[in-house]
Image (tube, rainbow, N blue to C red; front, side):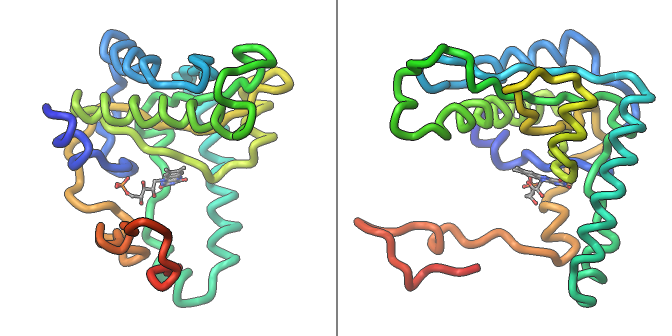
Length: 211
Ligand SMILES: Cc1cc2nc3c(=O)[nH]c(=O)nc-3n(C[C@H](O)[C@H](O)[C@H](O)COP(=O)(O)O)c2cc1C
Protein backbone atom coordinates (compact mmCIF):
# COMPACT_ATOMS: atom_id res chain seq x y z
CA UNK A 1 0.00 0.00 0.00
CA UNK A 2 1.38 3.44 -0.85
CA UNK A 3 1.70 5.99 1.91
CA UNK A 4 -1.00 8.08 0.22
CA UNK A 5 -3.37 5.13 0.17
CA UNK A 6 -2.70 4.43 3.86
CA UNK A 7 -3.37 8.09 4.67
CA UNK A 8 -6.57 8.08 2.61
CA UNK A 9 -7.99 4.81 3.96
CA UNK A 10 -6.96 5.21 7.64
CA UNK A 11 -9.99 5.36 9.93
CA UNK A 12 -10.60 5.74 13.61
CA UNK A 13 -12.09 2.31 14.28
CA UNK A 14 -14.65 1.62 17.00
CA UNK A 15 -17.30 -0.84 15.82
CA UNK A 16 -15.47 -2.92 13.22
CA UNK A 17 -13.04 -4.95 15.37
CA UNK A 18 -13.48 -8.68 14.72
CA UNK A 19 -12.64 -9.61 18.33
CA UNK A 20 -9.69 -11.70 17.21
CA UNK A 21 -6.52 -10.41 18.91
CA UNK A 22 -3.68 -9.01 16.84
CA UNK A 23 -0.71 -11.40 16.60
CA UNK A 24 2.58 -10.38 18.21
CA UNK A 25 4.61 -10.36 14.98
CA UNK A 26 2.27 -7.86 13.32
CA UNK A 27 1.99 -5.81 16.51
CA UNK A 28 5.77 -5.53 16.84
CA UNK A 29 6.11 -4.55 13.16
CA UNK A 30 3.59 -1.77 13.75
CA UNK A 31 5.33 -0.68 16.95
CA UNK A 32 8.60 -0.68 14.99
CA UNK A 33 7.04 1.86 12.62
CA UNK A 34 5.93 3.98 15.60
CA UNK A 35 9.47 3.84 16.96
CA UNK A 36 10.80 5.24 13.63
CA UNK A 37 9.05 8.57 14.25
CA UNK A 38 11.00 11.81 14.13
CA UNK A 39 11.60 13.41 17.53
CA UNK A 40 12.98 16.67 18.80
CA UNK A 41 16.70 16.29 19.55
CA UNK A 42 16.23 12.59 18.66
CA UNK A 43 14.89 12.30 22.22
CA UNK A 44 12.40 9.46 21.40
CA UNK A 45 10.26 10.40 24.41
CA UNK A 46 7.64 7.68 23.84
CA UNK A 47 6.96 4.28 25.41
CA UNK A 48 4.20 1.81 24.61
CA UNK A 49 2.33 -0.24 27.19
CA UNK A 50 0.55 -3.25 25.68
CA UNK A 51 -2.61 -4.31 27.51
CA UNK A 52 -4.29 -7.63 26.85
CA UNK A 53 -5.55 -8.43 30.33
CA UNK A 54 -9.37 -8.65 30.08
CA UNK A 55 -9.88 -7.26 33.59
CA UNK A 56 -7.75 -4.18 32.82
CA UNK A 57 -9.59 -3.63 29.53
CA UNK A 58 -12.92 -3.92 31.38
CA UNK A 59 -11.82 -1.51 34.12
CA UNK A 60 -10.73 1.10 31.60
CA UNK A 61 -13.88 0.63 29.49
CA UNK A 62 -16.06 1.23 32.57
CA UNK A 63 -14.20 4.47 33.33
CA UNK A 64 -14.55 5.65 29.72
CA UNK A 65 -18.29 4.86 29.79
CA UNK A 66 -18.65 7.22 32.78
CA UNK A 67 -16.77 10.00 31.02
CA UNK A 68 -18.92 9.48 27.94
CA UNK A 69 -22.03 9.92 30.07
CA UNK A 70 -20.61 13.14 31.55
CA UNK A 71 -19.95 14.50 28.08
CA UNK A 72 -23.42 13.51 26.86
CA UNK A 73 -24.98 15.31 29.85
CA UNK A 74 -23.00 18.47 29.01
CA UNK A 75 -24.53 18.72 25.53
CA UNK A 76 -27.57 20.75 24.44
CA UNK A 77 -30.53 18.50 23.58
CA UNK A 78 -30.04 18.48 19.78
CA UNK A 79 -26.32 17.66 20.04
CA UNK A 80 -27.04 15.00 22.68
CA UNK A 81 -29.44 13.33 20.20
CA UNK A 82 -26.75 13.37 17.48
CA UNK A 83 -24.14 12.04 19.90
CA UNK A 84 -26.26 9.22 21.34
CA UNK A 85 -25.68 6.58 18.61
CA UNK A 86 -21.98 7.38 18.17
CA UNK A 87 -19.65 4.70 19.49
CA UNK A 88 -16.50 6.22 20.94
CA UNK A 89 -14.36 3.16 21.72
CA UNK A 90 -13.72 -0.50 21.05
CA UNK A 91 -11.65 -1.16 24.16
CA UNK A 92 -12.89 -4.66 24.95
CA UNK A 93 -13.85 -5.70 21.41
CA UNK A 94 -10.36 -4.97 20.03
CA UNK A 95 -8.81 -7.24 22.66
CA UNK A 96 -5.64 -5.13 22.82
CA UNK A 97 -4.90 -1.66 24.08
CA UNK A 98 -1.71 0.29 23.61
CA UNK A 99 -1.16 3.14 26.01
CA UNK A 100 1.28 5.57 24.46
CA UNK A 101 3.11 7.41 27.20
CA UNK A 102 5.35 10.46 27.07
CA UNK A 103 8.48 11.03 29.17
CA UNK A 104 9.57 14.66 28.97
CA UNK A 105 12.76 13.87 30.92
CA UNK A 106 14.02 11.58 28.14
CA UNK A 107 17.01 13.17 26.44
CA UNK A 108 18.14 15.06 29.55
CA UNK A 109 17.82 18.77 30.33
CA UNK A 110 19.24 20.08 27.01
CA UNK A 111 17.13 18.59 24.27
CA UNK A 112 18.31 20.02 20.97
CA UNK A 113 15.42 22.02 19.46
CA UNK A 114 13.14 22.02 22.51
CA UNK A 115 14.54 25.06 24.33
CA UNK A 116 12.11 27.61 22.88
CA UNK A 117 9.10 25.36 22.17
CA UNK A 118 8.71 22.95 25.10
CA UNK A 119 5.72 21.21 23.49
CA UNK A 120 7.97 19.75 20.77
CA UNK A 121 8.60 16.80 23.11
CA UNK A 122 4.91 15.98 23.20
CA UNK A 123 4.60 16.60 19.44
CA UNK A 124 7.26 13.91 18.93
CA UNK A 125 5.28 11.31 20.87
CA UNK A 126 2.17 12.19 18.88
CA UNK A 127 4.09 11.62 15.65
CA UNK A 128 4.85 8.10 16.89
CA UNK A 129 1.09 7.61 17.24
CA UNK A 130 0.53 8.73 13.66
CA UNK A 131 3.25 6.37 12.38
CA UNK A 132 1.61 3.54 14.32
CA UNK A 133 -1.81 4.39 12.92
CA UNK A 134 -0.66 4.51 9.29
CA UNK A 135 1.44 1.33 9.59
CA UNK A 136 -1.56 -0.48 11.09
CA UNK A 137 -3.72 0.71 8.20
CA UNK A 138 -1.18 -0.65 5.70
CA UNK A 139 -1.46 -3.99 7.57
CA UNK A 140 -5.28 -3.76 7.38
CA UNK A 141 -5.32 -3.55 11.19
CA UNK A 142 -7.71 -1.13 12.87
CA UNK A 143 -6.78 1.53 15.43
CA UNK A 144 -9.12 3.65 17.54
CA UNK A 145 -7.93 6.52 19.72
CA UNK A 146 -9.72 6.85 23.06
CA UNK A 147 -9.37 10.11 25.00
CA UNK A 148 -12.50 9.99 27.20
CA UNK A 149 -10.49 9.40 30.38
CA UNK A 150 -9.09 11.26 33.36
CA UNK A 151 -5.34 11.39 33.07
CA UNK A 152 -4.92 10.60 36.79
CA UNK A 153 -7.05 7.45 36.40
CA UNK A 154 -4.97 6.10 33.51
CA UNK A 155 -1.72 7.11 35.21
CA UNK A 156 -2.78 5.04 38.19
CA UNK A 157 -4.02 2.08 36.12
CA UNK A 158 -0.68 1.91 34.27
CA UNK A 159 1.47 2.54 37.38
CA UNK A 160 3.22 5.41 35.62
CA UNK A 161 6.00 7.11 37.57
CA UNK A 162 5.95 10.88 38.16
CA UNK A 163 6.77 12.78 34.96
CA UNK A 164 5.49 10.08 32.61
CA UNK A 165 2.15 11.07 31.04
CA UNK A 166 -0.33 8.91 29.16
CA UNK A 167 -1.11 10.61 25.84
CA UNK A 168 -3.31 8.04 24.13
CA UNK A 169 -5.16 4.80 24.65
CA UNK A 170 -5.22 3.06 21.30
CA UNK A 171 -7.50 0.11 20.64
CA UNK A 172 -5.83 -2.11 18.04
CA UNK A 173 -6.93 -5.26 16.29
CA UNK A 174 -8.06 -6.97 13.09
CA UNK A 175 -11.16 -5.44 11.51
CA UNK A 176 -14.04 -6.71 9.40
CA UNK A 177 -13.83 -3.58 7.21
CA UNK A 178 -12.71 0.02 7.18
CA UNK A 179 -15.50 2.57 6.88
CA UNK A 180 -15.10 4.87 3.87
CA UNK A 181 -16.05 7.99 5.83
CA UNK A 182 -15.27 8.96 9.44
CA UNK A 183 -17.96 7.93 11.92
CA UNK A 184 -18.37 11.54 13.04
CA UNK A 185 -19.34 12.45 9.45
CA UNK A 186 -21.55 9.40 8.98
CA UNK A 187 -23.48 10.23 12.16
CA UNK A 188 -23.76 13.95 11.35
CA UNK A 189 -21.54 15.22 14.20
CA UNK A 190 -18.97 17.11 12.14
CA UNK A 191 -17.69 17.05 8.55
CA UNK A 192 -14.14 17.35 7.24
CA UNK A 193 -13.36 20.90 6.08
CA UNK A 194 -12.46 21.35 2.43
CA UNK A 195 -8.69 21.62 1.88
CA UNK A 196 -8.89 25.15 0.48
CA UNK A 197 -10.39 26.38 3.78
CA UNK A 198 -7.25 25.24 5.57
CA UNK A 199 -4.74 26.88 3.20
CA UNK A 200 -3.49 30.45 3.63
CA UNK A 201 -1.15 32.30 1.30
CA UNK A 202 1.79 34.31 2.66
CA UNK A 203 0.11 35.04 6.01
CA UNK A 204 -2.82 33.84 8.05
CA UNK A 205 -6.12 35.25 6.84
CA UNK A 206 -8.59 35.56 9.72
CA UNK A 207 -11.47 35.91 7.24
CA UNK A 208 -11.19 32.17 6.69
CA UNK A 209 -11.43 31.37 10.40
CA UNK A 210 -14.29 29.08 11.34
CA UNK A 211 -15.31 27.17 14.43
C1 LIG B 1 -6.19 13.26 19.87
C2 LIG B 1 -7.37 12.45 19.38
C3 LIG B 1 -8.28 11.97 20.31
C4 LIG B 1 -9.39 11.22 19.89
N1 LIG B 1 -10.26 10.70 20.82
C5 LIG B 1 -11.27 9.92 20.41
C6 LIG B 1 -12.15 9.29 21.35
O1 LIG B 1 -12.01 9.40 22.56
N2 LIG B 1 -13.15 8.53 20.88
C7 LIG B 1 -13.35 8.36 19.52
O2 LIG B 1 -14.28 7.66 19.15
N3 LIG B 1 -12.53 8.92 18.62
C8 LIG B 1 -11.50 9.68 19.03
N4 LIG B 1 -10.65 10.22 18.10
C9 LIG B 1 -10.87 9.95 16.67
C10 LIG B 1 -11.52 11.10 15.95
O3 LIG B 1 -12.87 11.22 16.30
C11 LIG B 1 -11.36 10.86 14.45
O4 LIG B 1 -10.00 10.85 14.12
C12 LIG B 1 -12.06 11.90 13.58
O5 LIG B 1 -13.44 11.87 13.82
C13 LIG B 1 -11.81 11.69 12.09
O6 LIG B 1 -12.13 10.36 11.74
P1 LIG B 1 -11.07 9.39 11.04
O7 LIG B 1 -9.93 9.25 12.02
O8 LIG B 1 -11.79 8.10 10.84
O9 LIG B 1 -10.62 10.05 9.79
C14 LIG B 1 -9.56 10.97 18.51
C15 LIG B 1 -8.63 11.44 17.59
C16 LIG B 1 -7.54 12.17 18.02
C17 LIG B 1 -6.53 12.64 17.00
